[in-house]
Image 1 (cartoon, rainbow over the protein chains, first blue to last red):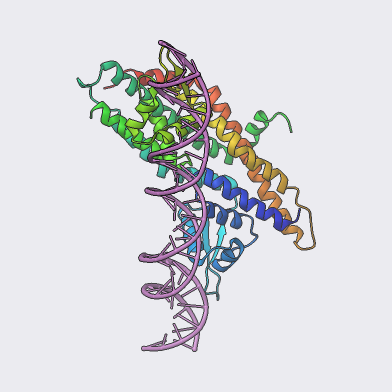
Image 2 (image 1 turned 180 degrees about the vertical axis):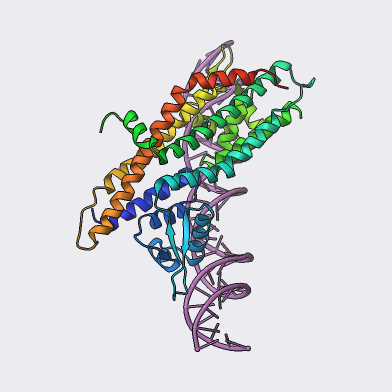
Amino acid sequence: MQLDEAKSRFIEGWGTLGSAWGVSRTMAQVHALLLVSAGALSAEDIMEQLQISRGNANLNVRALMDWGLVRKELRPGERREFFSAEKDIHRVATLILQERHKRELAPIMRVLGEIRQVEPSPAASPEETQAFTQMIGSIQSFAEFADRAAATLIKADENWFLSTFMKLMRPRS
Amino acid sequence: MQLDEAKSRFIEGWGTLGSAWGVSRTMAQVHALLLVSAGALSAEDIMEQLQISRGNANLNVRALMDWGLVRKELRPGERREFFSAEKDIHRVATLILQERHKRELAPIMRVLGEIRQVEPSPAASPEETQAFTQMIGSIQSFAEFADRAAATLIKADENWFLSTFMKLMRPRS
DNA sequence: ATAAACTTTCAATTTTTATTGAAAGTTTGA
DNA sequence: TCAAACTTTCAATAAAAATTGAAAGTTTAT
């Protein structure tokens, strides 16, 4: 397989993965393209390589900058902007985790905290109310657990932890 | 807040969360509804409570059964089917993890493995090819790490989780 | 101040995804 | 066997999301 084909397949695969996880296909593809490009790319480059319009390229590049995954790069004597992706995968994972925490975990946790304050009422049996409270409580504590575990693992990963853990978890290969 | 309102808010919030993570809003809402319903519900119940059509209810209930999150419940002497959700959140998390592994991680890992076989060619500099290979390699190893870590933590911390769960079951201040 | 070289915006459009509802299919009991 | 009581399917439709492209906005050099 040639490099160009490999890159295309990565871009396609990353796009598909993204859309399964609630990220727009094109945003994931722009990210993939920048991940596998040696240098920074201009809007024109992105438009051409992914066959998308200027507006679309601009929109998605800005979204990626909001996530902290892509940076503008200004070159002296050049008027146009170039874009490059964060290449350190651990840092990429951290950034994605942070954003998803902020955008999705935090809001649902707020809702869970609020609805857990449900009052007993004559309209519902105490058993039903209690079952509800227990369900919400267990979701809350699981979410907290998962959130902490993810953050801990990713942080640990950046130090000595990764190699040790991976050896322990992957006795083969 | 009354129980009914709390349930509605949960259903709405779970639906929103689902759509941010690539699950259709209605599927997540059906799941939420079954999670907070005391007993099993019929198709009619689901249709009525979520205001959706019969076909839609059927489709989503079957999708949830494919994920292993919902079970059919047959009652002696009743012709229609009732549905109930897996209520153990720990088990819910495991099932979701398993399915996402199968549906999304496995395919991208296959692609990564394939494109890593990229051959040196005169069309690309060795440096560029090597940078690509390194990027793909680091994504592979991170994905493997995250996958194993998630599975390991969910399994290993069952005791920790259960103790927290028990604490939360007690009424608080 | 002007124009060139860019970037950004957004209403219109296209594409994708979800939903409906009626028809077809299935199961059960008499 | 039939018919009632269900479930499932799927073509049509609706709704949501992504995309375009042209106009407006911005920056820079002269």
